[in-house]
Length: 243
Ligand SMILES: Nc1ncnc2c1ncn2[C@@H]1O[C@H](COP(=O)(O)OP(=O)(O)O)[C@@H](O)[C@H]1O
Ligand SMILES: [Mg+2]
Image: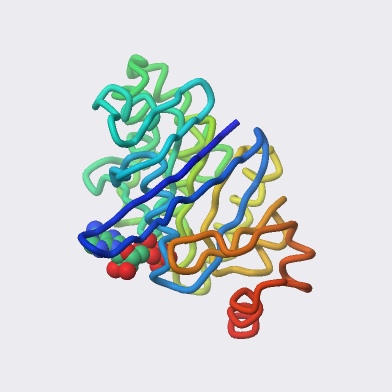
């Protein structure tokens, strides 16, 4: 179970997250939509301390921290409970697909190399990239790189998977294979918070949709309600533009 209370992040005088409250049940798949610049990435990044929030209580599984006073150890503890899929994949360019997936298991979880590589090979098989195990990111397509990025997050086996616009850097031809893999992750009931512009995908895989604007959650509900009968005029205006 994930709980966020009063999550606030400012950049100078710009309040990017304005006292966000959010609870996510185990196994729940939550999609975040909203105009650009409204704090969606900052929400995900603050939840695992890629950005340090100014205020807020964050609970992920067994770990609970107060952002204001969080020590480096506490921040690491939260980070271990989460995995992250980045828009630009954020793979290590000098590591093979297998090593990209194994890296966190070795450095974060302390697994020995053989065990981590065995697990990475299982993941590579799951994501359909066994034959690319020894390939470096530069020789993979965008879709394959993002599948490795998702594989790395799967390997972390985290309480919460944070996924930030996983297809927006991809050429159109690679989008489907990435969405299909994410659908499988969602079908396995991995708890996830996913920012996406793929509205049909959000509708297909999510249990709940959050609409964010101006650093706040303006409206939330089940996808069938949010996409057909939004209550807030800002949600309606946004959906008119993107649907
Ligand atoms: N590192 C940063 N330094 C200063 N301002 C930032 C930084 N990151 C994000 N912002 C600002 O925070 C706001 C929200 O950004 P972001 O969370 O990326 O929005 P979204 O993901 O919804 O497009 C924007 O106004 C952006 O300019
Ligand atoms: Mg963003």
